[in-house]
Image 1 (tube, rainbow, N blue to C red):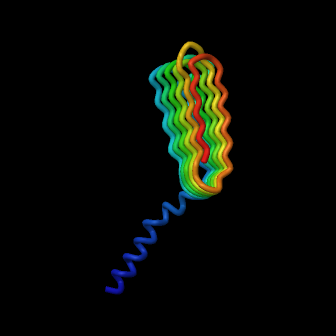
Image 2: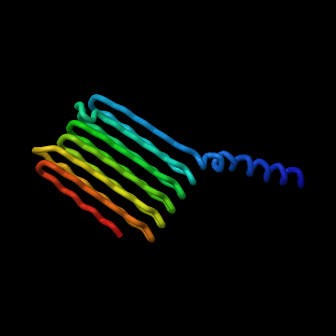
Image 3: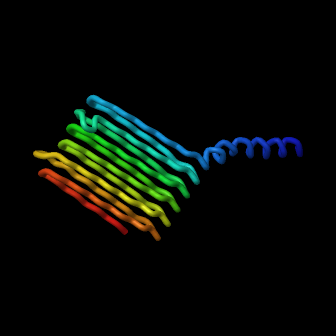
Length: 171
């Protein structure tokens, strides 16, 4: 019985080891897409990591129906995310949550029918959101939400064109 218990403890310890070894990493993701109906999705997390995500979907070129999602979470991380989109019907969503993080989100959209959502939450974070949208003749909207406790938050939204909506909530 004693041997079974010891083996069970060792097995439990070993099964938990990969999660611990996944921390203290540099995680970098770069996605470049050209064309229509493109989807890019990045998830990065952990603890004590440097998480960098860059998504370029037809920026400076042309592309329609572009979707980009970035989810960065964890504790004590340096999270950086950049999404660039060009064309029509663009959607960008960046979520950066956790505690004791440095969060930076940049979104650049050139075209019409653009939507951006940036959510940065947690406690004891320093978070920056920077969104730029250029386009005429159609609805372009941005929603930035920065919440939590003991955070330093900064949000900048620059829009040029017509049919523009911007909402920023910081608490």
